[in-house]
Image 1 (cartoon, helix red, strand yellow):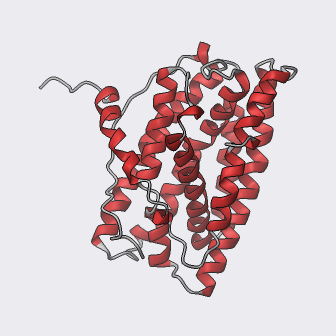
Image 2: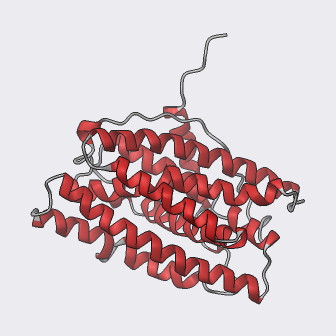
Length: 285
């Protein structure tokens, strides 16, 4: 394991954001299609974050982890994911209030993940968590390294995504370290890790794209060709997410892969300013 390779310690931060339902379809400068792509991702987070927490907590609570450093990182990871889930529930409430169908999508994700809990063994649930954490860490890296993704966006919405991206970066190695600690690094563990990635990506993208289409339909943006071009650039353009992630996807199948092989910890210095800006006011004694 590379748990001691970098001095990156996840920290639970209680930040609060506000969401305006009237801005849900136009908070991004590229219009509804771009706004709705990020909105669609948000729909997956509350239930998804809880699934991640549960998959890691399962092994912690069974006393299968005895590394004190890793146990501390797990506690911080759970705290961060809980905060992400809370803020994205508020975000998704604004999506629902805007009439974009977020509540139906959220219910679908919840049922889907409940099914996964029933049919998959804990090792594959953790493997799926590692796969999706790799995806979110990769997306986070693109957002942080290329400011054009959120350039010109509503400052509050941009801050939400920057905060989430920074904390996904901060804890990107935790689930993977848990996986290697409890499942292992042998051929069987590698096979579970690889197959979990293929299954997770198949399910995730086959859900995201129809949800995105539906949200654009509810926004009245289906015939907006300029908007579709802008949305297409986010996914398939020269700097598009899928073009970028294809490299990270392949990299994940290296036998000696670790999330911190790509060290972007220098980005984390931006967290302090966000924490000061969006931390709730201290309660009076």
